[in-house]
Length: 247
Image 1 (cartoon, helix red, strand yellow):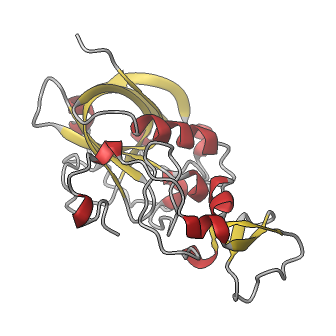
Image 2: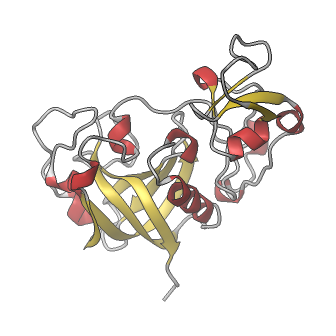
């Protein structure tokens, strides 16, 4: 899905503001509170699960329900950065429990933030262990960091994360990535409100702003992402973000 359609190229990315479409407001889905999944009209489970209710697709998304099989009932490219609410078309797969703090080692994570710079994190040694799906593989992944950096850009990823590119203000060549999961893809973590709040804040930040960002360390697979740290370290998930006043 393109982040901004070609016809909207003149709109500043972080100023995009769109409400749910009229189609999403009018179509009635079947929302199952047991699974937090909603079903579209005509599907096999529509109105047939033991518990559930008919609500609009827009209300289902806003309430944290995910579309069955990752496919929404209405096609939409509207991205609501300013409110932190966007139609979720799919969630992640690779190391997903670690990325949303639903992994088996979550209880070992120290949530007291440790101050660090982008350059310092970029210089950490990459672990030689294989990257486990639901286990943390280094001390960095058990540590919460507080980083002050320049926010260069934000984009919506295919896994519905908000993808943030950070730059060290003292060493402009040093960059890293931070990611904010979609609350709809993190149901049951107890962090849904934090993720939504962080996404809302991001929607009001101008590119190039100095920010303070708090997130848990994470080593991603190396796949030639633009702006990625040389060792693959990220802040993933981001727990909070705020704009710092200009000096």
